Length: 569
Image 1 (cartoon, rainbow, N blue to C red):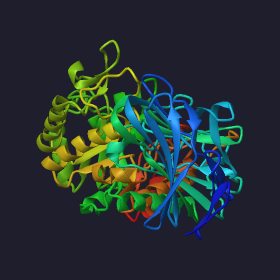
Image 2 (cartoon, rainbow, N blue to C red):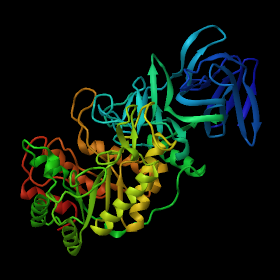
Image 3 (tube, rainbow, N blue to C red):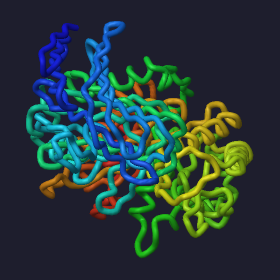
Image 4 (cartoon, rainbow, N blue to C red):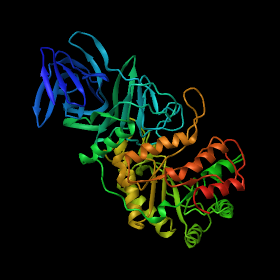
């Protein structure tokens, strides 16, 4: 790495990038990609953090690295330094503060300041790229969106407008920039890319979301800690790591490799039971298609599942795994089976075992339904909001539930849904101090360990394709299909799910993929996706009689065709 110095700047040429670091203001030009604004704000529960003076950078070269420290006087902290660490392949950006406080919003690539020039307000980095890749499905469907469009990487969301961005929760925390306009909803341009990934392990991910926030040709990154992370003495933010990439898929693979190299994500290959790879039948699509004036959850019933499975068997489809979907349980929190809908569930599961099939139970993560308030995250009024995995009493409950479901009933694992309902809010109260993505990992750690203790080959399916979640999941589910692009045109389901498959397999290359299959826009989309599923992971069948969105019937010939595509006859 060659460094030359002038009166106004340091010039770095690493062979992988060219960087000009200003000696007169907090900025650095990453040639061809962006002008990095080297301000940062570390807000607290006590108020906004604003820089009121910037000092010249200090350069230290050691171990083949160039480290630039940009001291900044802060309204909230005793000291604040933005650090830019340059290696031959990467540029790493982080902020370090000293003092005491409870973290609110933290911004990198910009922040609030009154500059030495007396310009004031929020300052952002200038972006010279034209497109930004997001690793999380969102609506409208845009895999590579204009660089002027925001991105949220989060564990908080639902189907409400502006919140349908947690289909993967959490996704890999990586963005990728390109120099060409995206050509379609799922198109990925050729050419050079710049990756920006977050280097943080579980313990450091106490934020609920990371957002890319562009305005008028500038942008910054915002970590939302929601006033649940206390700092006493000093704190260093997660590093944002910039590096060249040949594609967004390489960006995700490099993100995982970086986390593994720094001991922030596991590198073990999970042991697989042979039955995990057999085709799945999940009853949710059939429940939705049969629903006529009733909620689909009322149709999670033993008699209907027997009817659907018998029809599938007539056409050669005998799934190795059956998922009993929402709502087989009386309450989501305590998971006691509903005997009216699932009489003699233990005997039913044993009967499926005798036929060589396994049974998974759908689990709604975070639900406080049926739990005592003391085992829950509560709001300012003391009302339960979510299960609290930081509470030892709730963790004991989960272990007891697993003994009941996997031991007494004989179920073979769980399909974990709704991880995107992570509690969020500055006023919420927990038993412990963990928050955000880290609290979700604690929830899944509790469930995973409890399940494996009862049944070592229990299968845990989640929709959490972040590399640091490799140790709490056996299979990654591609999750619900979305519909429209930014122009209002339907996006083929198979195109959406190929993109999701690529994200998941590059983030967690050793994990199986549950290809999902709901909802399908039409019978034609369903058939096209069913044909593609064996190449994308473990095939999953959701429909038996008709498509719920269009009410188009599914014929016996259609089921025969699925059986042939899946090698079942």
